Image: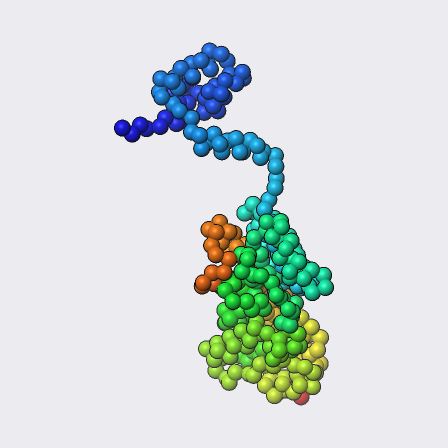
Length: 350
C-alpha cells in the first residue's frame, strides 16, 4: 500500500507554528521551549512524519557552502592584447560579464597569441582549472593560426571571423540593420543615399572586404531598390581622396552611410554639407545611425553557452546555431531631421 508522505509544512500547519520552528524542534535545538519541542515531536510521531533524506542532504550542503562565494568561470578568448581598444569587443565583453554574473558565473579574459599564450598552453590551463565554456571575441585578423582543440570545450563565437566547423555564434543582424537604415533615411526625405565602407587590409580580409562589410553591401544592393526609384549608387571603399571625390561628383549622393567615423574630415569642401549616418553609434548619443545593441551579443552568447553547459550537450553540435541581435535606429542629439532642399549641381560646381 502506498503511503502519502507528510511534509514539514503540513506538520507546521497542524501544530500552528512556523515551519522553521518545526525544523528546529525535530532536531532538538535548545532555542525551542521544552514544552513546544515535545508537543511537535509527539505530533510528528502521530502523523507519521518521516524526514526526507534528499532534502536533509540539500540542507546540509547549503549550510556547508554558506558564505562561500565561488563562481564557476567562463573563458572569454581574445586574440589581440589591445582588444579593449575595439568598441565591439569591449561591448561584447561587458554584456557577457553582466550576464555571466546574473547566471552565477564569472567571466575571465584570456589573450591568446603565438608569443603570449599559445593554443596548446591555453587549452591546458582551461582544462586544469575545470573551465568548460568559452566565448571567442572577434579575431584580430584572418591570418591568426588557431590550432586549438575546440571539440574539447563548449564554444560560442561572437561575429563571423572565427571560421571553425560546428561552432555556434552570436552576431549583429547586419543585413537587417542596413534595411532599417534605408527605410529611415527614405522617411526623412533623402533619395540618393551612398554607402561608403572601410577599405580593409589583407590581415582583416584577403579580398579587401570582411564578412560584415559584405553583409552591408549585399543588404544595400538588395534593399535600396525597394525604397528609391533612381538607380542604386555603387558602393565605394575609397583608398584615396581622388577616387572618393570622383565618386561624389559622379553620383551626387544626398546622404552618406558609413562605417568610418573620420568621413566628415575627408569630405571635400564643396561636399561638407552632406549628412552622414553611421553603421555603429552605440557609444555616442550625438550621432545618427544604427545602434547595434552590441552589449546584447555578449549577453546572448552567455545564454547560449550556459544552456549547452546545463544540458551537457556535445561540445560540437551536429547543427550549430547562429543568433542574430537586431539593431535599432538612433536619431542622435545633433540630428538635423529631414533632408534639406539642396541642388546637387551647385555642390559640384562650388
